[in-house]
Image 1: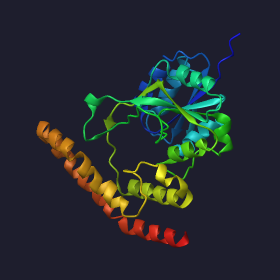
Image 2: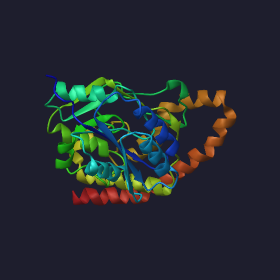
Image 3: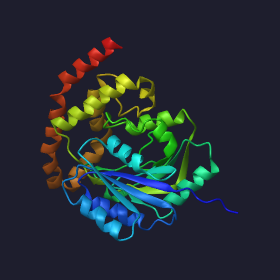
Image 4: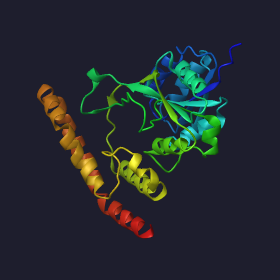
Length: 301
C-alpha cells in the first residue's frame, strides 16, 4: 500500500507585483501534485494584488490570501507559516514560475530522505533576457545561499526555530538555512525546478540603503557564526566591504558586460546612468552612519 503523500503549503510573500504574481499563480495552477495549498501574503500592497489573489481563488486554486501592513519579507513568510495547514512549507517568490513537477519532486525528496531538515530545488533563469539592469537568480547546485525562491522545510522545524528573523531584509534565508542545518541535512533536488526570469532592477534610494545597512548590522551582531557561510563576494564581513563589494566589485566584475551593452544600446544605457549615480551617492551619504554603528558594535562585542 502506497503511503499518502504529505500535504504541502506553498508560501508566497508579495508586494506591489500583481502582474508578476498572476504569472506565478498561472504556473501553480498547472502543478500536478494532489495535496497542497498556496498562501499569498500581501505585504502592504497598494496595487491590485488582492484582486489577483481573489480571481485565482474563485477560479479554483486552493489559495488563502492574507494581508499585513508593510513590513519585511521575513514577517510575511512567518504570517504564512502561522496559517499553513501542511506538514511541509515550500517557498518561492512572486517573480518566479514553477515547473509542473516542482512539488512532486519536493515531496519525493522528503520521502527518500526522512532525516532531511530541508529540500532545495534548482533555480534557472533566461540568459537571453538578462541585461546589466535586470535582476535574476540562478542556482544550479546545492548549498549556500539557501534562497527562499526555491526551498522547502518541515513546518514543525520552522515553528520550533521561531520562523524567519523579521529584522533582516537580506540574509534571512541564509540564517534559516544555517539554523536548519543544525537539525539535519538540506538535500538538493535538481528536478524541483523554479524559473526566476530577469526583471528590471529596482533602484535603491537612501531609505532603501538605510534599511539594508541596518539589516547588515543586525546580522553581524546576532549571527556572527553564520557570516563565513554567506557569499564571500556580496556579504559584509568587515566595514570596508561596503565599499569594496557594493561599490568597487560591480565595476571590476561587470564592466565588460556594461561596455558591451552600451555599444549595442547607447541611448538605453545613457538613460540608466543618472540612476546608477543617484543610487551610489545615496549609499555614500550613509557611510558615516554605517561605520559609526559598526565601530560601536565592535566595542560592544
